[in-house]
Length: 383
Image 1 (cartoon, rainbow, N blue to C red):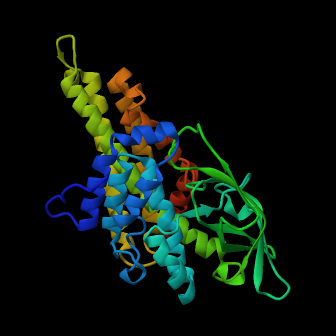
Image 2 (cartoon, one colour; image 1 turned 90 degrees about the vertical axis):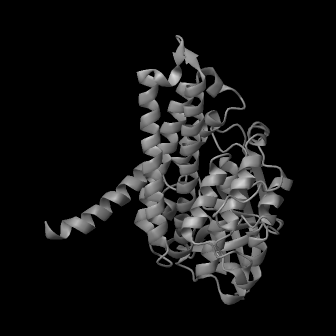
Image 3 (cartoon, rainbow, N blue to C red; image 1 turned 90 degrees about the horizontal axis):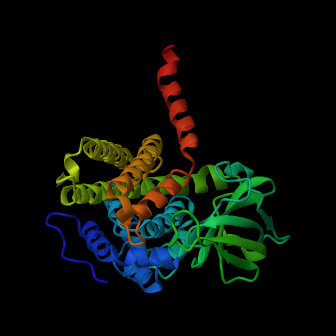
């Protein structure tokens, strides 16, 4: 696939994402059925500079501002959540390394993440440790001479875990949260492909077993104790931002497909769009999508203030956008009827994927707790 002509006035990488998405729209249904984004497509995404585009130019990125990164995620998410998922996981790991890695770690790892030489995976979730990542039980033991680390544990639901060359693993060292990079070609790494799940079927999801995997000590990112509060928190925050924008793209795509169908299809001799119930559905999902876009844009403006800014705005955007994607997918399928349930239906895929987005990177109820706590801190002091 080649990116199509750049839309007038769009930043180059945003235009490249729009063109890439346009050409991916038809084959995305095949990827969903086959359960994989082809390796060549992933390489093309890398060649287009769309894997970690917000990295500084000195590490191979394009230095995209948050608003531009959001638009890239929206374009990709509007056709294939797995493509957006690749952008998300690659940039999550890159963001954590950029902020918390040493100079040597950044120089070694970031360029191959930006150019796609390495595919990254974020290995945090475990059985019994999903949203509650403080409960992870993966053990990271330091050797007696301090030159190596041994990683033992089992990670679940790793996006692109079937393809990842390197994993950012969250575990515990001496009882303290620790983050470490693990190459997947090391002895002791085993992959269990996951297929047939509700959504994100093309995202190469895998469960991973790490059986006494030995890595150099310089693969630890940040000091022991900072693995969750610093390294994983940065990765998750970045992930929520691109997930939010990807859900905006899903919601807007569902609105567009539903409106086009309602305008073209007749029922009882009149366009479907003129039926009051259909018009009401269209209006609601359009307003929800527009609201989600505005919250995502607000998060982008807050994040432009620098590292660590806009965390609550990002959580609010992800919460609203995931809900908008889910409602838009549901109502668009209702409007399209049998066409929305067809194997090649974009809204059908988005309907399934959007439900996963309400869970991934922290369930909606976790977001509600964070937002409520923020409101209490903001307004409760004067009570």
